[in-house]
Length: 601
Image (cartoon, rainbow, N blue to C red; front, side, top):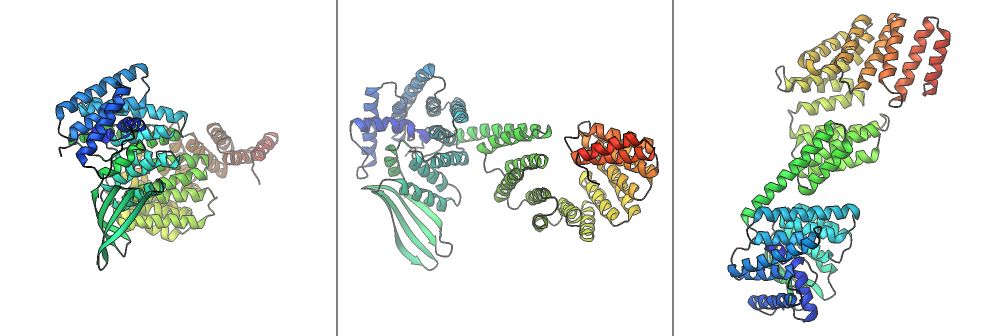
């Protein structure tokens, strides 16, 4: 048999099947499992010819004739029929430019004429129109089917499977066809034959009562059985496979499909798609186009992420994932957008969605240690929503960091995150200090990524300050600032806290001023925190007038609606400074404002 072009992907699909179904409704001729293949094709051509007598502009019928001619080696006739199909779709689209099925048929016809770029463009247009319809009605099973067929035509198999699954979820009349398409897609995937068998069994389950499955043992070979499976519909054989069945795993180690074409015979009755073959040039071009689209959506998502438009970032990533659902990077990025959005909103359900996305990324790339680090980070943030009381979740986060270290013991980022949770969440300072030291040791003095090494020194300094070892902690913060002077705002903030605790108030004030100087304009909360802490240093130093000015600056930069507790505390401390200056009425007003915001003495 000659190699069949990309057109075959759709010509046995609902496009030509609809023409066949129409013909059968007039002349009850079917393709019998007992006739020869050539006679079957002759019967098919008769069905298409009958459909064309009723409607000479039936593009599906022309495509069916083109496909049969191509299979039988009549290339000149085949091209003639593809051209007639193209003319017919042009006529349809003049009347209705939003006809997704017509665009799909046009793509098939153009592919048959080897006009590959135009073919891909037409199929993409069909998907766009289906998407528009699904925005209006997400439960439009026909539009999901159109998308699935077009995706499959573009050799985007996993995206096609997802769309077919949606058809099944909606209990569409095309559910049987969707299961069969999933079965055929999976069959040619590496190690996909077990899932293929399961999918085909689901199709059989939904077929009429006369459809059945029977399995037979050819020979028992110890731990494996050489088994033949036959699926039938009345006297028609739908599918035959022979494979090695593993008794221990209860799965097939290998399957060879012996008969597949008769499955298409049954599918003609369901207006569904049949068995496919490919053409390298079309496949490569389609893959490149889809990769460009995927990359475009991913780039858009990252730009939105940088602008803190996290919901829109997730939407863009969903579009990218639809095109490439097996891409772990996309799922990881989606988890990040969901996780950060949840941290701002305090939305636990959104965190759970983030973790599901991260689990999907890990499933797709289980050997990637960074994915486990990200999951641990999200789990720790989820625990934070419980008010730092959910110790079990923090322990789960530690386990994820440990999984990352099992995969990559030299991963300093895993050591740094682990140390952070041990210190700030579980109060295990000694263990945290050892973890920070390990991160610093791995990163080294001349690390390429000074940012990560700088963060490890900040973490170490924080632990040392908690242990009362202020001089050592200040040295650690200085090391952090030296390593990353362009992004040293957190180093200066942490150093200010340590100086404040060690009663070196004048140096603390200078450190907090440095934080304000280095803080981005958008980071008003960070700047407000520095002003608030500066006020604390000045208050303890006895410089009450300056303390009041610092507190006022903190209140100005941190909208009370954003962080009410911080605002309440700042108003209360301002009241203390006013009281120290003898400004009683102003102090009382400040205390009243603090109470209004929820401060409790």
